[in-house]
Image (cartoon, rainbow, N blue to C red; front, side):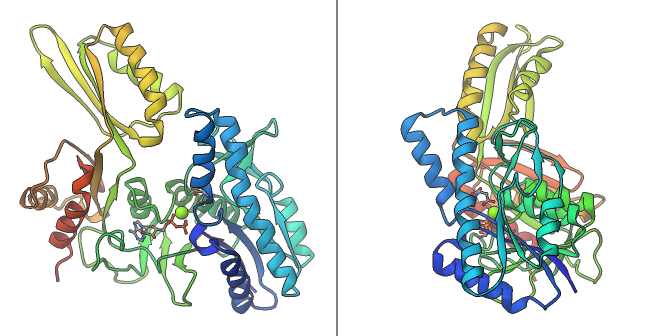
Amino acid sequence: MAFIVKKFGGSSVATTAKIVGVAERVLKEKEPDDKIVLVVSAMGDTTDELISMAKAIDNRPSQREMDMLLSTGEQITISLLTMAFQKLGVDAVSLTGGQAGIATSGVHAKARIVDVNPERILAELDKDKIVVVAGFQGVTELGDITTLGRGGSDTTAVALAGALGADICEIFTDVDGVYSADPRVVKDARRMKEITYNEMLEMARLGAVVMQPRSVEMGKHYGVPIHVRSTFTLEQGTIIREEYTMKEREFTIRGVTHDVNVAKVAILGVPDQPGIAYTIFSALAEKAIDVDMIVQSIRNADKKIIDMVFTISKPDVDQAKVLVEKLVKDMGALGVVIDENVAKVSVVGAGMYGSPGIAATMFGALGEAGVNIEVISTSEISISCLIKEDQVKEAVNAIHQKFFKE
Ligand code: ADP
Ligand code: ASP
Ligand code: MG
């Protein structure tokens, strides 16, 4: 008997025919005593379409109502998939995030799972039902519906697998595993058999959308293995776990990632005084705006003014703009420039610590490809460069080519 949580992403359930296909596949792989919990995303581009509908009414709709709206996408899929099982003569039940016991913080659009109460799911499994849960959503203490950020169904699935003590969490998607770069961008990217939580977390954080970063954190927290695999083939994909079990590492760099979902904010001519960074970044933190790369540089040493440059994610731009314009006025700074035509390219690998020359190789690849670097940041297991968005494809390919040549 196995206890498995299986998550199917948006493209895997994009049409009713695909939904029936998912039900058939699940039954084909199921052994008689297996306990199966399914987590599903909204069909195809439903989430994007719902966002466009909201924007047609108000460009900055209330976050609470956005969550109310977006959560309906996943609810369509759970009911249709459950009907597909019932039609195939199998007992199944659909549950919303709240019904499945997903309790979250109250930060709309970016809520965090704070607790999972699996009683209802366990009761349904005891009745030998397949349980179909809406991904990406939860409820606050007050009963308000929240969503977990784009790609949040991954996090629902791994959190449930952890809380239920499942043997494994399978992430079914439109690629057959985790690759050394986005296979849509780099044609000869390599599929990995295994990757550690830490390296996958860094890749996800730096733009590999195949897993939402928080889902990998969740997997690490619970120690639940995650298997990323294709919905459309039966092949083994990539296992994400704590340690490598086989000799997988041939390259110092594990992956090259890119993220076009970033914007650069430059606050110009900020008075160079103690507490100024605190003023800026605490104001952003209060609005739950994540700041990533930060560079402070001297603008004019005589006048004691500096420039503060940092990156945020594109969906936060509208909110950040209002906030930073107010800060500029209050601080007596010269102004603010926001550039959305930027992207971040990164190399990730736990082995890079203690391997000098990785940064130089990366910068060399970008230089040869004629790509200008605007901002650089590093962690123990990654190096990132901010570049122009329209050069991202050549940049990723140039870097991948350098690190993954035979
Ligand atoms: P789903 O709808 O199933 O959640 P996503 O679109 O969120 O699917 O994630 C799958 C996509 O992730 C792939 O189609 C691929 O383009 C992209 N991706 C980015 N980086 C990687 C990577 N390193 N390995 C595999 N896929 C990646
Ligand atoms: N439907 C949500 C999204 O498009 C959540 C998910 O698919 O994981 O981001
Ligand atoms: Mg996804």
